[in-house]
Image (cartoon, rainbow, N blue to C red; front, top):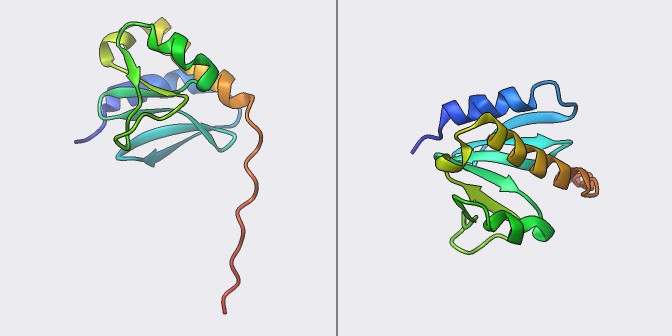
Length: 118
């Protein structure tokens, strides 16, 4: 199933002008990265939010939110927000802001090791 391109466009509008934000197609959808760290994405018609382990319990108390279980088991620090929880631009922006604030606290990723050809 394709992802919700309308939601992806709305997210693009929210993140336009933010420094360090890029979009990348992944997981059959699209994700946005802040300084190389994924923070939000669209999977089918849900918003994927990297809220962090400390914010997950509070996020799950919000309407239309469930644990992200992309691999079949719950992913710590990630939630899905169903379309009904994203009807207003204010609601979408609050989820994007929460995720961006969380990943801004994460350490930089170490550089990838380059393998030498034998």
